Amino acid sequence: RPDLKQLYANFYPQLPFSDFRGRCEHFLKAQLSGRGYWLVAEAGRGLVGSGQLVIYPSGAELANLQVVPEMRGCGIGTAVVSVLTAIASHIGLDSVEIGVASNNIRALALYQRLGFVEDRKLRLGSSQPALILRKVL
Image: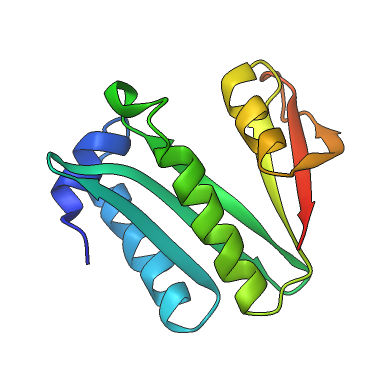
């Protein structure tokens, strides 16, 4: 189990720690029941990436994909997405989705390079439009 304080500091400092801890406990319970997988990437300096495979009755999505800013462009995001996608395939899922803000050109290019294609557009309130991408496994 990763160091929660480092995970919090690297990826979720905008949340109160108690909220973050509750989310972690919730997701770890889901993982123990086979409804999700949480992957962390470590390098010499500690935790450098994180991502989740969330399994729903009607499908699955990759969520909360993050890489520390100073390690972006080093292949960590590619590795996290690739491993989570391989897990999804291994457990028999037919496809997996991922959401990305339409203005996040770097992430969009990564996901497309890894075989994800645009499935639909999504707009949540007044926020930036998002794209839902899908990869058939």
